[in-house]
Image (tube, rainbow, N blue to C red; front, side, top):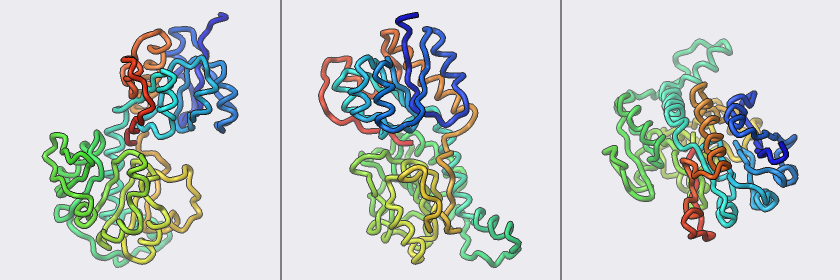
Length: 334
């Protein structure tokens, strides 16, 4: 039909569009995928689209400006740092996300990385697979119940990890900008105390100007030389050069990283080739169930907006009150 809505899906980390198309079929919408995700290509295709859904590709102010028909931008995930929310808000375009689709998966992944660090599982696996069967390859292993997990951020995922870590016997402390424990009863500490006390520091903060490289040479220097950094949030929270230098110099025991800046990273860099560093390819959010939930939820919200309804998770709700300004909307973690 002539007025069939067109939906731009900028990119995806899954092999097909079956879930997305099933939802769009309810309103007879057409799904459009670009040949590339650079700004110029997205601007060209967005020009005659009524909605934009994005996984990791950047929906910049230029892309939004190039899409005069756009009525909704759906983030297929939680974090919003790849969407120019201000530009969408000025245009009165709702921006949605899926804030709870992978909470359990990321918490499980973070705990798995912690346990792998605690028991040197990846290190010993690598050595053993190379033909070295040697218990003496590691030393200084500590009983988990005598160690401390520090959480930088205590959102949904941080709270889930807190309960899992407690079940393993870990002492858990946390730092948040608000100082709130969000009903967990978790011991709240200053950022400095978090760095000083943590045997494992797990990051669960959003990517904002305030958190950019919050782990840098100075902050890493305050950590124990036996400590590990675990990041399943956003790569920009860590100065990767400083992290590599801290591990190489023995000022930090190691790290477990699922997110990077940029993504994908250059895996030939010494940091990622160091056997004290565990690296996974931004996989913490993935399960069959989480992907099905996220893909369906994102497109149901998109369709709701195209039908003139208010989607469930609008992160710039001021567009509905008429109080549209250029104020920043903080992105969510993970």
